[in-house]
View (cartoon, helix red, strand yellow):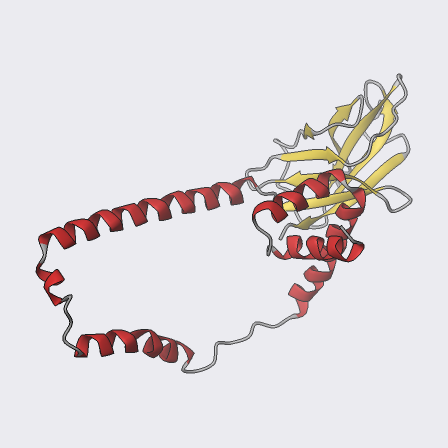
Length: 234
């Protein structure tokens, strides 16, 4: 895949234009490929600015009337002509078959709606890309509508035996940073945010290097390895 194709894939992933194999590929690359994750973060920022500045465009007068007329015209023309299928309207077998077809269509639509709802329910509402001092994406925080949050590392992180990675979040400077996880190594983990307010835009997440049992003060004491702010997922 060329650099141009990767950039296109990242942009279309952010816009929600992908499906099937391409969407699966984009989701996998966002976790496994730091460069692709950085491209996704860059496109999110670009399109976020577009959303904030683009005014709503009203529907032109008469548009719906023209659409309705275009949809109705073939039916009106067909109704005006005698048809060899007119007898179907009086056929019990026809209506039984139509009823079965309608029931099947309703079932398919219900299953499709259920799968769509499940997909949306499991998609993150907010995403924070945590970057190092070298501006390299190193981890992703996903926050979900039900209040859950998870950390997904993008890079391996060397942790000395007597040290640990401590994850923090900050949404209120008056309260200060709150610890939401302690790890002996970089791995995907569910964060301890059940008793905290729901994630909001620009909420800070960061990881510091602390003693093995965690910060002795309840506040970050070691060097900040990476940090990032939450943005609404598209």
